Length: 430
Image (spheres, rainbow, N blue to C red):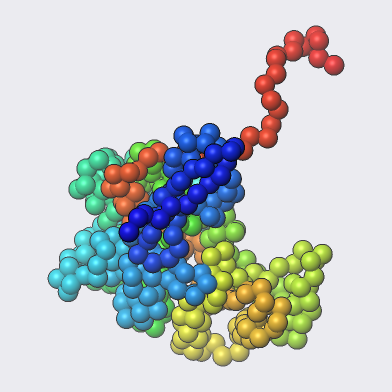
């Protein structure tokens, strides 16, 4: 059977380009030789129709509402696994055996402390600095403290850097939070699981004992799982692009954090919560629905629709269940924000306008409510996202480094500026 090809007719000539097939998902036309053969580039703002790499890590079918990590549905991983198990899966390609899981947990746990000198690093920031600004600077500074894991050509150093970042990110995030609210840092505790340890570092104080609520810890763990990786999104593509230059892994992750900070990416759950607060009560929903439908009104419903998912975001279903578990455990029965969220969801699933445009609730719609119930201020939401997404960034970075076809990223452009012109002396310019 001959290999399938795509034909392009350009400037009176026919050109053939091979078609590559993935294990699942759409075929791709290999245009890597396009410029060489035709002297032309493709134009694809935002790279929404361009596959920038081969990857075996995560697959999304936006039309079907499917999210798979190494082939495993996100629903099954969130229901039956824990975050570190998902970390192992993303990094190594398979679910761990009992022995492998125990060893992995041990290695991550023993890397959770940060260099003591990093405590002083935080004092260089203003107290009112946004925690994401602190995260960008602090994570980037890790390369100044851990010289023994910055050689990307050494597989052992890549492994050590991976362990360190997965382990230290919750510690750094908790430190950013404590510094912001003016409380002393709380050191990690090795007898706690990943999520419980993080909650304790955020909410414990030295003057009294802190008991981790297992329901809340499980919710936190599930939030981490749901945000662990999401294919070639903006921040992941940023990490890969930075890594393609040979930058050290700590710098690459700091670049990912900076990209994630954007309100169109990691800040979406904060925006959704602010919107629910603005609506305020169920009786005001019709007014805002009409505003959302009005093209001339700048108001937009946040937490609905997705760049990739054209069906119900599978993570949103799990997040909705988690939200109810947390509110039930904390005895929050009459939360006006949740009431608004539930009514908005009902409308979005049945109103012709939303159904036709496929504006289904996404994960950000529910995660903001859950994080607020857990006790986090809105400026910490994106920080928590970065803690979870670190393993996805690391797995994607590691895959890129080990790819023999990897080249430094170099997108091209359609130049629309002035054509070539001669310099005009100052005294002759009109």
